[in-house]
Length: 463
Ligand code: UGA
Image (cartoon, helix red, strand yellow):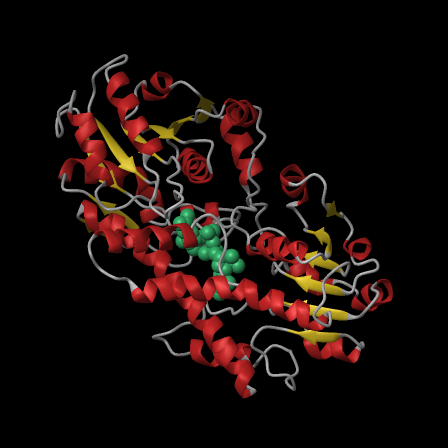
């Protein structure tokens, strides 16, 4: 099929476009960002994502994907138009829908260039219930629904760093629409994924049964996305609350979450206590859902608590650093390991780590920071800061080392060497990544999150 992806240089648009090209479709990714369009056409991805470079170059060569700023060029021959532009949070938490409505205006203006064919508009951006109706009403001023176009809501559930994997091996595909014809088009689009005929990176598909296809109303599909992200956020805030309880009762949250997760009604995912959730999605969507609730006259107490618990994680880690430094942070040298909002990405958006750094600086601390991939982005954001490429160099003269992103490579470092370079052997592991018993044996003072003081910080195990 011929597909036009709008917002095609952004995270969701790029993964979707490349994924569809790999399925055999011909894709044009349209984006207003000239620099990114130019980079992508050269085969250079602006985002760090497992497997993206080779896939991009392969499909530029095969001619199955190209990037342009021109919407009419993307619409030529297209049967499906995917909207994947951003819906950032406004200051008050409401989702900003200006990009979506401007795309709808542009679409209705260019719909008939060069031919006036029927196309399905699939909304992938995370948008409040009612947004599909907004696109429908803008399109409907000039075009006829059912004849010229239909709208579906097709939310994405991609995790950064695992985006392509999640595209090819989804847990479910949600199609919200009241048009039978549009649903059939979208099923055809994803057919190889649904039937598990694709292989990515040599991986076997996680199952042999077809991917569950969830067909709903437009409103339900949009709500499924918000409710899913809010639920993931709730699990994280829940386990962080349990972590603080563990600390006060001598239990170890790693053992507790491990034990809880075997209950088939609970599972192990999203039960890692630590610094809380950051990144461009969970908090934004949670805030938007709070606003949607309030606008409908409902007080979303639970959702608000989830958000508040998350904000407290940063404060509590800062308080812990302060305590370790004898209450005065002025001129204390603190090294941070990890700037990205989670491992396997160079994304610094809404990173809890940057929030901690900011708070420590405000109190007079001198910061040194390392990240395995996000240093170029960090330097662009704050050129004056001490960002250091070598982790052993980064800890030089430090009074404390903070682990703020759970990059697995930090667990592989030689902590004997690290201790020699630090002014004071103190580690605060805000992601519970390291082996505390080993570090204590090396002479470090080690603190994790939610781990009783006497417990060795090894992995819990059955047996
Ligand atoms: C999230 C959802 O997981 C995706 O399904 C969704 O498609 C995406 O948002 C989106 O709406 O676009 P992502 O933002 O990539 O994906 O991040 P996650 O992997 O979910 O992690 C979010 C944050 O939670 C990270 O800061 C991570 O460190 C933290 N986290 C995660 C925990 O603190 N504990 C956990 O157990 C899991």
